[in-house]
Amino acid sequence: MSNSPNHFLEISQFDSATLNTILDDAQTMKDGRKGQPKGMVEADKPLAGKILAMIFEKPSTRTRVSFDVGMRQLGGETLVLSSADMQLGRGESIADTARVLSRFVDGIMIRTTGNEKLLELADAATVPVINALTDFSHPCQVMADMQTLREHKGDLSKLKLAWVGDFNNVTNSFIHASARFGFELDIAFPKEIEPNHDVLSWGRDNGAKITVGHDADAAAKNADCIVTDTWISMGDANDTGENKNLHNQFSPFQVNDALMDKAKGDALFMHCLPAHRNEEVTDKVMDGPQSVVFDEAENRLHAQKAILKFCMSET
Ligand code: CP
Ligand code: NVA
Image (cartoon, rainbow, N blue to C red; front, side):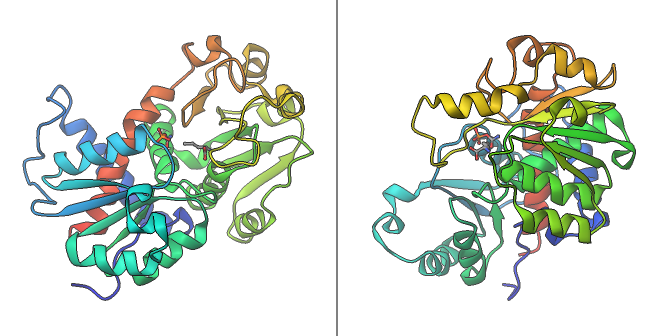
């Protein structure tokens, strides 16, 4: 077993060539299985005999199902673990959990809260660790989004994206992606929200073409794609129910027909899902012809299969 596992922790960790190779593989696998049953295993079974443990400290639909189905399609198997049912839930350290799981499985995927937990896991694990969302980032989602954009629009370096709404974990991964894939990123969010200055600095230091402001219309102007996300992420201080102040802060950032009209005529609408319909996006936009949200969801499967192969095929 390798002493330095091939973790997939952040998009920022990799150069453009590596990320594009992963996306190429994702697209080849997607194209190669058109019309096949979802349970059909890839002919070369690249992860035969391998087991992925999936630890969830937060809820999930897409991540859980796409990693599970993806491993099966690659010839491997999965264990789905909820931290609440593990000794992790009653105080065993993340590092010890990593050391133990590394004796049983060939890879660990984790959805957790603080980024420090991901790093502690990756540091102690002797098998690859994959980041399936933290409070800081959501790199697997944004890799699927890059695949989706490439399919619909081609060369990413020629695109302008508008991110409107919250400044959250998905935004951070889009900033990482902007530096690595070369697209312009215009971010608009409520002035009451503090952006992640470290990530913005990292992006600028690494050549990302980022604009930051509080005007959704200005961000959307001439955009090839408008992207948004829920106004309240899992575990946010406001993740408890109705909050009228928050609603008032965010409502100017709703993606509706008027905002889509500010973008290019053929602009896409993207959202990682789950959506809170008629809050951050109207039904009309979400269900309209410019929306590619279910392509993004499907591409979680293909992009993550390529990530799983990248991380686990040689361990
Ligand atoms: N987009 C995403 O990660 O969805 P889930 O929370 O359902 O996994
Ligand atoms: N920003 C959202 C993404 C959900 C997939 C959250 O963290 O809840």
